[in-house]
Every structure is written in C-alpha cells, then in structure tokens.
Image 1 (cartoon, helix red, strand yellow):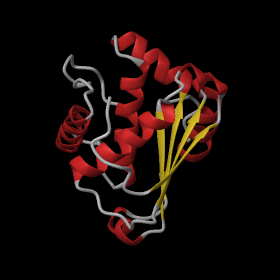
Image 2 (cartoon, rainbow, N blue to C red):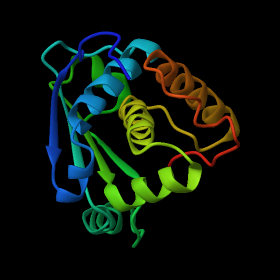
Image 3 (tube, one colour):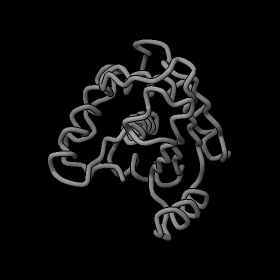
Image 4 (tube, rainbow, N blue to C red):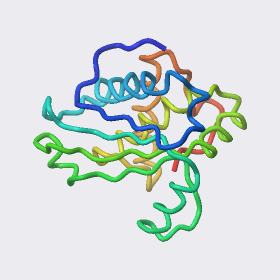
Length: 169
C-alpha cells in the first residue's frame, strides 16, 4: 500500500488500545486511506481542518454505540461528524472516526482479507460518512461502495465488495 498524495487535512490518529500494536504501521495506513478517500470523492476541506481517527477496542466502541446510537454492541467503525455535510468545506474540525480492533480483526479474518486492507477500507468508509455519504438505501449504498472501491484501488487494496461482502456499518 503506497500513498497517492499527502493527507489533505490535519490528521490525528490515536491508539486508544494496545491491541492495535499488532499493526505497527496503522497510522500510516490511516493517513494513506484518508488521502485516497479525499482524492477519489473529491472531498473539499480547509487545509487546516482537523480529522481524528481513534484506534479503539470493542468495549470503547460498544460504549459509544450504546450512548450515541442506542445499540448496545460493538461495530467496526463509528463516525461522529462535527458539522453538517454542507459545512465541511469551511469547518475547522471535520469529526471523529473510531474503529474497534476486535471487530475489525474478526471481519478481516472471516473475509479472508489482511487487517491492514480492512482497516484502510473502514477508514475510507468512515471519512465518506463524515462528508455525508451513507448506505441507508440501495442507491446510496451503491454510490458509496463505488467510491470506496475506487479509493481503495488507488492504494492497491482489492475491491472489498467483489465477493458480496456485507457493507461496513
């Protein structure tokens, strides 16, 4: 996986769980995936805009999922946009993307993907959510998946939907 350009925003990646230590280059993967999402979706943000990505564990994500979405279970990725999608171009803070290690690792294993590729996919997915992309209906899902697939292809990650794998939550 190689970057196609530098990260277009100020990116803060936080390792909130030691479980991510099995992926020493996680921060680099996050940065590459963020850049790919911005490039492929032609996302616009201030040069000094901030985006936070937290590499957490299932317990942290489950607590957040319960508090903010009334779902008492972990999920692979949560996104918390700081502004409405039509305000992202001028926002100083774009939002937070939070990933749950155990869920991400299990899904990667079950889908026959590397942890780094699945992490890249979910980061792209989360960034698109920050900018208002969604998959609530078939048309939205199809459009979002197409952008994800092209963004991942930019960085050498195979199409995560090629084998009818369920979309990320």
